[in-house]
Image (cartoon, rainbow, N blue to C red; front, side, top):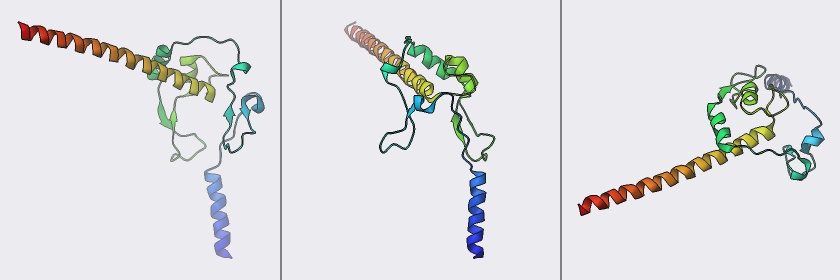
Length: 151
């Protein structure tokens, strides 16, 4: 009996030490997620083109530059043990860099995903541009070598 009481007490202490942070929702959860997805264990963010408006082009290279300049650190929430680590930007830095979202104290996962995907597109364009430059430079080097052999 004492062993069972000790186990229950240990479980209660563990729950207190590792309590789940409180979820803060801005807006209507149903308008942000689809809850009825069979087999899904996480919220799914709505992204249907038909529910969006005011589309504006972005420049993936500029997004990439802003991501590269944004401080990304490892940290813990004040209400979690210091051994529970996270990696990411501060909401204030994210808002200053991209000007999206509800406020400068939260990062909407739609925006975080969009920024990451745009930065990947920017990186892809940069890699392709550099590959073209490398090919041109190799062709120039080969031409110079051919001229040097002839001379």
